[in-house]
Length: 133
Image 1 (cartoon, rainbow, N blue to C red):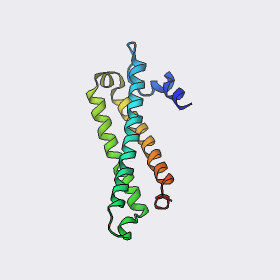
Image 2 (cartoon, helix red, strand yellow):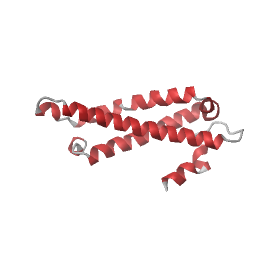
Image 3 (cartoon, rainbow, N blue to C red):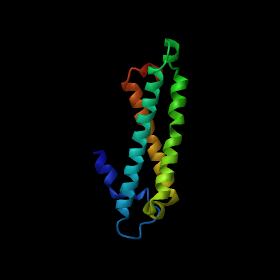
Image 4 (cartoon, rainbow, N blue to C red):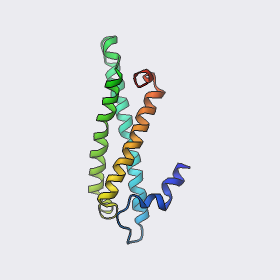
């Protein structure tokens, strides 16, 4: 169901500034896939970072994270998503030409939403759920 939504041309049009040439749908799909992959990888990285910090903690006080620390970690994780997407957008010529600046901003917001969903889901499915609820 999600794959069908992501491949629908109406949804992909949201991420394009101009679609004059053939193949712009492929470029939009590639941009959406890049945004999803970056969001998932960054969410996994922050969850791994938190696990390592908790694993290497010496005492129980250092292993216990407050809700505020967890939320700050998730918010700080938004920065790598932003930087990575800007680098990808600028380095791929088709993204720069077809997706444009408006598509970049929409892709960043879309990726941030997916990142937050995966970060919260990762916390809820782990033993750390009490640190987020």
